[in-house]
Amino acid sequence: MTTPAEPPRSRHVVPAILAGIVATLLLAAGGAVWLSSDGGQRVAHAAVVEPVPVPVLTAMLPSGPRMAAPWSAPLTLSVMDGTLKSVTVLDPDGTDLAGAAVDGSTWQSAVQSLLPDATYRVTATVVDKSGEPRPMTLSVHTTPAARVLHAVLSPGDGDVVGVGMPLIVTLNHPVKSSADRAALISRLTVVTTPAVAGAWRWMDNSELHYRAATYWTTGTAITLSSNLRRLQLSDGTWGSGTRRTTFHVGDAMISTVDVTKHVMAIRRNGKLLRIAKVSTGRDKYPTKGGVHIVLEKTKLKVMDSATVGIPRNSPDGYFEKVPFSVRISNGGAFVHAASWSVRSQGVANVSHGCVNMSPADAQWFFGLAKRGDVVNVINASVKPVLWDAGMSDWNIPFAEWAN
Image (cartoon, rainbow, N blue to C red; front, side, top):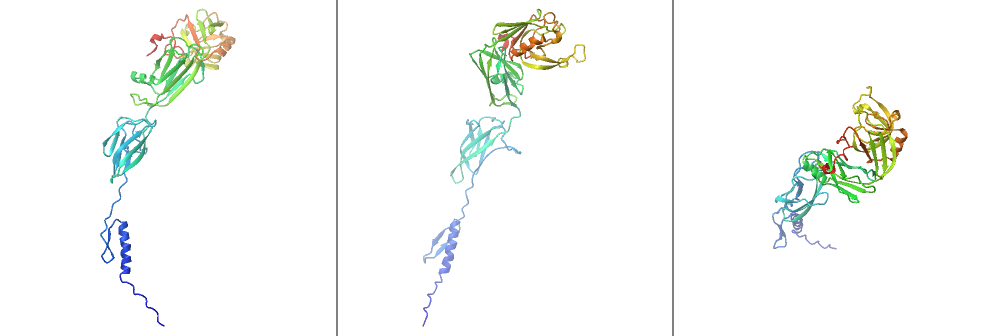
């Protein structure tokens, strides 16, 4: 029996398979392939196509570990391997930062300084080298300011104060120039119910007070707000933060100390509650005249003569724990209990400048007193000290108050 012979293999099959593989590889690499007249494939030389580089959008930053954009310079953006078609930059509040293209690859903000310690969001369209538009985003953080201005508002939120209480703003950095002071005051808002006109006065470079022409009316609601965000002062200090406090004016506690008659008349809402015998400052240490306000009260106050320039071991020195002490000046004047001067109360002035009362009267007055209550000292031989917080607010005519 004979076995059928296998058909002869074409001598062109293997080369054709190899040629197909090569052609496929070349096509994948960007080459060209065409068929020969006998059905075979001929391969052209490979035309290698370079990939299109991806554009890179960056902010021009100084070298350093933080790699943050300086707030004191314009924001500059640049792109490599592409052309800027559009740029939108938003600050932390979502406000658009205006700017323009310097050339096809660079954009710069119109403002010469940015917000310190802030993050800007960049959205851009960049055209790559093949002409295709590519959306791109970028976040840029700025360097912090060397000096940041904060405000502390007083009285505190929810407080009930006396009719003589001024609004107080205390700053952590001095503000000296008139332009900077005006700019800061423009960031302060006072709303009173019922409406009352008032004015600010700078007590020093870092504290300012607000008052009306006359004492507040009992029941008045007052809201003080500050917004120092985006405030830039001439010395490079930047404002920061918003604050708000709402407080109310309580009973009108107005007391009158008569230095020559040695008495103190205490009135609430115009009604006389008590006339207490007192002893005020002796000739060497006279009690200052004028309107004082209650600054604080302490049930047991350590009083040290050294704090007012009198050595403890001198004949006039003292170091005592004094009960029911109501401070009416930063210079050391108090209304307080003085058991040691009861015999002189109502008769003579023997204190170091304070208003001495009997322990019973002092305890009673202490219970009524609140911050901002008025203590008016009359018939005194010495004028008020206008830089002292307890005496500064109501001894300056309102026409001269604003500065």
